[in-house]
Image 1 (cartoon, helix red, strand yellow):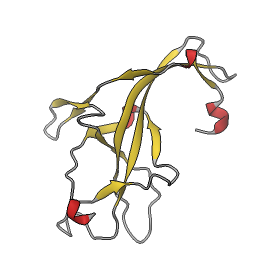
Image 2: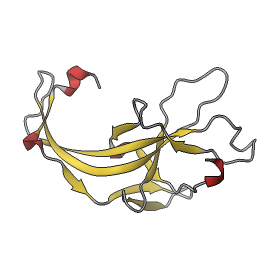
Image 3: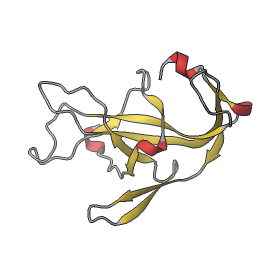
Image 4: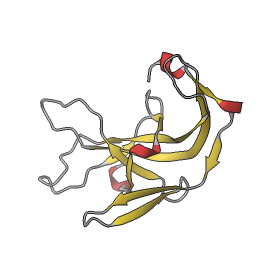
Length: 149
């Protein structure tokens, strides 16, 4: 969103409403319905579809990974000429810290190695972000590999 679009949204009463758990419904490979529970303290890691520009030298990784720090909702009101809504709306939001893929080693099916991810440097812009829970595909379980640093 642009800064101009951000300026058209007003957070009512300047309040955030925290939630402990986010429940995600998804369809399994055999077309069954399942549910993930994302809890920032116990099961915080998620995956979303990547939005990267394709690189000619290599195929981009299809997913981005993040750790949910907080799960909350806010009540907002749009105040622009384009908006047709006069009533306040509930907006669900996740505060996340993004993981970065380690591209220094070959991974995937051909290399017979899992993809490696790690936290982005905390000083880089874009390390933390806000995410719409509707774009989350699933919760994930990351296995720490302390031997790789």
